[in-house]
Length: 74
Image 1 (cartoon, helix red, strand yellow):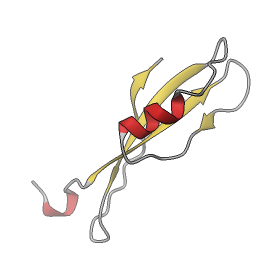
Image 2 (cartoon, helix red, strand yellow):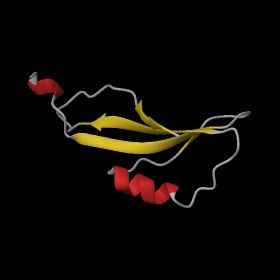
Image 3 (spheres, one colour):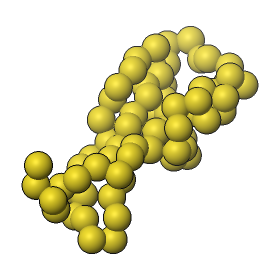
């Protein structure tokens, strides 16, 4: 494993893509359970797609340049 590209963890957020309109991004959470708890109060809109995205986080010595990736879809 390359020492410059080691993992420190992940962050998670919700992404909502309405049928018509701009994509909405939620806040970043440290755990999936925090994201689930935040999404429990959301009333789903008909025609919208809901995604859970994950992103690697790194320390000040790491150069983590990875964009968020979808890990779940509703």
